[in-house]
Structures are given as structure tokens and as C-alpha cells.
Image (tube, rainbow, N blue to C red):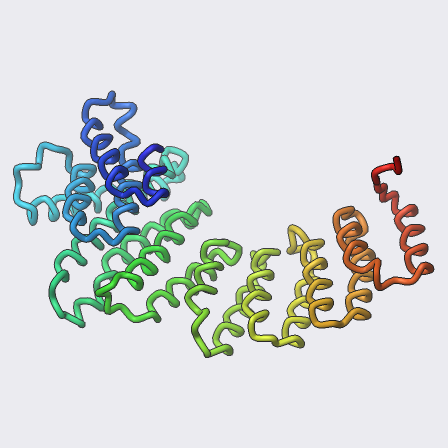
Length: 351
């Protein structure tokens, strides 16, 4: 925790030192505690990846190799250790698949197993980048992610049956994003976009993936592609409030008023899929007010109190926004309706 805190404060030297000290003491811990070593190794490896400290890629490779081989193989040549680790990893994957196939998945420690899969994907990525460092090999540069992506895809397939694949799917996108941002990378941006689209088709409500695709496409002028993609994922049964909000967000900067209204109407006609329909009604009112359409905003408000009359926060929010545009008779009708719906409001009594 201390090392992670230092890395978040951008004190990479101190964080690296703390991680190295912790990892050097793993062998001294009891067996029950050493089982969690892959989680520590993953945290250290991710920190190195995020900082693009390629000089330390060799060290994290050795650390990950120790997870799969132990310290007894330290005297072997690097190439021998890598080959042995790949064989051990294949056996580990096969044993995990066997447990799932025999419906013994409850015996698989999910977090620990996923940490091992991610660690091995990082190992393959670090090895590929280290081999390319200082070389101008465009073709090999395009393939730098292939082996890691293959490992993560295999992990996603294994855990998909239990619905526990979100962690691996997100890391797959994160690794593609990190490679795209690496200064000497030659990987095409389409690789990242394809990873994002693949992940969102499986997890349309994942906030990390939704944020990432908006960030990746923020400088893209091909509006039709994003629209088609969001039209596809909001049509999924797994799409919820967050998915619709990001679909709307992708349109707001383009000023496409009619398109945004269409998305609001589509979302609000299927409230059974929404965890927070009142939130979308509030944003709809804000949008119409931002467009200077006061009458349209009032119309949305009256529809909202019919569809979500139970949401006190929505009543209060809309009254704060719209009361200045309402007549006394309209306000009187609204307060009467609130009384009928048993909506109770409190205010500070006059002194």
C-alpha cells in the first residue's frame, strides 16, 4: 500500500525501492502468505509499465519468471528460463480449464489466477519491447502485442463462463493503450480501437472502457463510426444508464441537437434497463435548458414526474431549475400533485 501511494504521488524512485524490498522478502514469508505474491508482482509490474521505464523491463521479467519457476532456476540461462516458464504457464492454464470443465470452478481462486495470467501477459510484452529497443523494425513493432493479447484473450474465454472476465478484458485494453502511448511504438491506433470495441461488446457498462473509447476517439473526425458503434452497444440488453450517458456524451461536443434528443427518447422508453432513470430525465431537462428551449424543458419535466414520481431528488432538482419559468398556477398544480404522491419536502423555518 505504501509503495502504491508513493507511485500515485509520482515518487517512482521511492515506490520502486519499496516494491523491491517487499519482493525480496517474499521467500521469507510462510507458505500461506507467499500465495499472494502474484498480486504484489502485478502491482510492481504495472507501475513500471505505466511509467514506461523500459530500463526496468528486464527486472520485472525476472521477477515474474520467479513466480512461475521459483528461485532455484536463477542459475539457468535467460532463454532456458523463458522456455520453462512458458511450459509451466501452459500447464497452469490447462489445470485451470480442467477445473472449469469439471464444474469445480469454486476451487479456482479468481483474483490470484487472474493475477498470474496478467503477470504472464506482462512478461511476454516486456520481452517483446526489450527485444525491439534501439531497433527500427517496423514489422516486428506491429507484432509487439500479439503474444500478450493471445494470453489475455485465452484468459477471458476461461473466465467468461463465470462472468468474471471483466478484470482481464480491461487489462487487455489498458495494455493496448500503454503500447499506443509508448514513445517509440509503431502499433497502429486501430489496434487500440479494436480492443476497445471488443471489450465494450462484452461489457457495455464498464466505465473504464467507456472513458477510454471517448478519449481514443476525441481527435477523430469520423463521426459516423462512433455513432454506429454506440447505436450497437446501447441496443444490448446489458446496456444501462452509464452506457446511455456515454453515448450522449459522445454527441454533446458535436452540437447535434436532434440526434441527442433521439438518444434521450430511446433511452427513456426502456426504463426497465436503466438503474437510474431519474438521472437521465435530469440531464434531458438540462440539455433543453442549455438549448434555450424552456417550454421543451417544462414538457420533459411533466413527463418525468409521470414516469418516476417516486424520485424526490428529481422533483427538487427540476423545481430548482424550472420554478423561475413557471406561473403561480403551474406551481400550485405541482405542489398539489406532490401532496397526492406523498412527496414530503422540508425547508428551514423562518426565524
